[in-house]
Image (tube, rainbow, N blue to C red; front, side, top):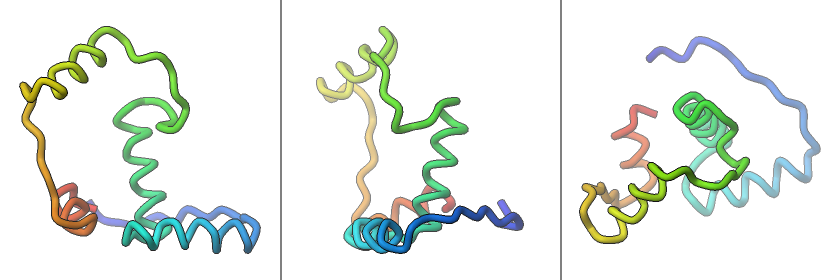
Length: 87
């Protein structure tokens, strides 16, 4: 998917520096973090960090994951995961 739109937000310099430090510890940039949040917002049809009680289907999937009954994927680095996700 081509990246042809710019999103801008004005924030406090100190907040930006603090956020970049956290993101750097994960090996990702501010742009990657924003893209991840927007993708999750579209996938979930809600703001991803606003938590609500999981519904029955979500709880069932979580239980299946805990029992090892659901396939999972492991990546060696965040960059490998981003590449697999097309980010």
